[in-house]
Image (cartoon, rainbow, N blue to C red; front, side, top):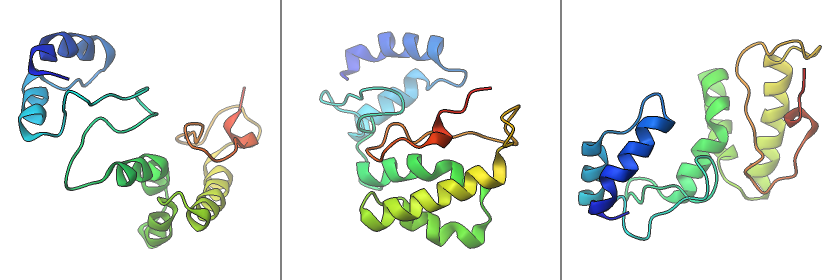
Length: 137
């Protein structure tokens, strides 16, 4: 994104999101180098993260997106294990699958009439889709 794109992108942002970024946020991110002309994303939840920040790598951002629901619902005592599930290597994927199963068991109504709390999807990741992701009422 270029500085001259900010007004158009901001107009889309306002229509698309309940809590949109302001023009100032976009300009500050461009100025800091977090958003560049090469910055793009495939979808709001897939592809590469939009921001290129020195504080967090794209891999770390995607790991947090992948495990966000787990951090929200699981007790802090389980956070070290969730942290390991942020990685998309063999062990991280195994731990993520195990924690996803626990999440499903703890927080979904198994009659599929409603969910007990929040729902999450791993469809944007390279791991195979599981039955728990195709819940229909």
